[in-house]
Amino acid sequence: MGYVKSYKDLIVWQKGMELVKEVFVLTDKFPRSEVFGITSQMRRAAVAIPSNIAEGYGRKSLAYNHQFFSIAYGSALELETQTIISKDLKLVPLNSFEKTESILLEVCKMLNKMTGKVELVTSN
Image (cartoon, rainbow, N blue to C red; front, side):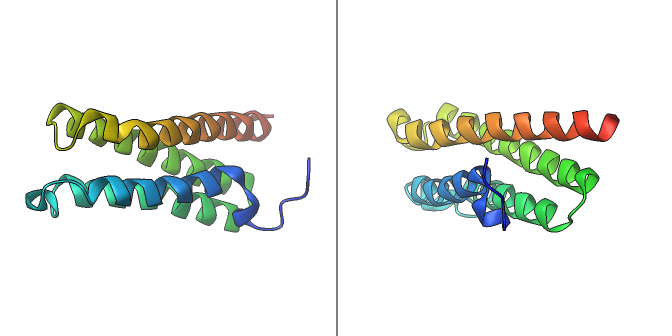
């Protein structure tokens, strides 16, 4: 495994950035009446994911890594819930969510695994 010089080298951060772009593309298709509602909420949750990964990495401490990776995971679950709400409200055709959901699932799995590994190290 290669040395990580920057948070930008983390695959989970890269996927988080990809997710942000996809969420912006998706929510741009939502009705204009949702600009200050679900659109804003989803964009903020998406942006919070790579932002918290970067902040946790920058703290240079396993305890802070765990804390901020956990916050990022919470934001991912928030985004997942907002995606479900958007689908239920049929704001756009259901197939519009496929790419967002696929990337989100991948990010959730990575963050879940990362927080688990950090927990193991900090509890010993």
